Image (cartoon, rainbow, N blue to C red):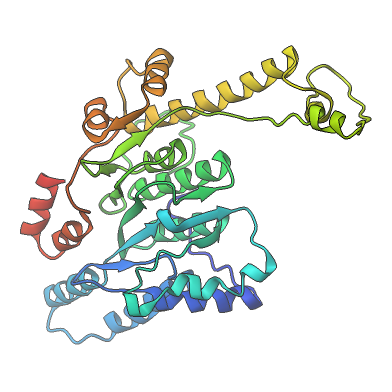
Amino acid sequence: HNATMATRLRLGPLGGLVRRAGSATKTVFAVAGVLTLGSTYLDWQLEKERREARLRHSPSDNNNADDDVAAQKRKAHQRILVLPFYRMQVVEKKKANALVSLAPQLIGRLSEGGNSDSPIQIEAHDLVDIIHNAAADPDIVGLYGVFGHGGGFSAGGYGHIEEIRNAIRVFNESHRVHRGPNLDHKALVLPRNGDSKPTYAYADNFGDQKEYFLASAFTHLHLQPQGDLSLYGVGMSVPFLRSALDKYGVIAHVFKHGKYKNAANSLTETGFTRAHRENTTAIVRSINESICESIIQSRSLPDSFNQRMWKRIFKYGSLTAANAKELGLVDYTPVVDPLDSILQANTNDEEMKKAKEKW
């Protein structure tokens, strides 16, 4: 997806109502605000139009004063999009009755400051659209993913996680101008579309490989010093019901064509056949190698991270935060969640300098 894509509005009769209801979750902290998951594309578009109208009608004495006023207003409207992954249940398609309960999920308990830990069910394409629109919005200056204590995030599979990772990559690259193929093979200097937008991920623990696989797409990765990183590789389990069926006198009649057509083996076999094991092993190995390669590219890991190295990591078990940092799998091990420090950094240049040195 192009990082400079125009803002798209996905509004159906019910979808528009649900998305507008999510606007109540917008919370502002100090100068730099936090834009929560419930904020919608429609809110961003309307706010942008109102902001442009105010700038057009702002009184000014000269061009320099206009620039200063515009810069101050842009600063005052800068936001960080915070994604609470520890609460997310990413699905392909929500059930019809799930739409009715979406608004209270996004709004949360206002009396608790919006910090409810109730799960948020969201479709994969909706989450991808939120990140894409944030990448295209100049007022969204950063992305912050919270993974909590680990184990709270769920997704339909690695395909959904790959989609979200690609959206985060679009956000990471949103400052670059992308052009078509250079057919003339001439040297080109591509201009920058503003400053780069940093992305941060923080976790007390990374409970499984799916969480870390997603978090590795962020440019800055934080893990609490007492936390751990659990990487065990990809696994697959297959139930075999033949013995149970035999016990009750049930006979399964199936038709197969080819030795690698193994879907019916759960009913006809008591364990893996040679072909079935070979097929399953090939699938697991392919997925695992793809994940490892993606992590290597995202984290810019050295050449020493070959398949032998990954096998040693998988067999080692849970890594401490110090181990993970030593290997380059995380960047920092802050004692507390650094979000407040990152927000404070946006208030003035001196605080920004301190934050860059610290984080």
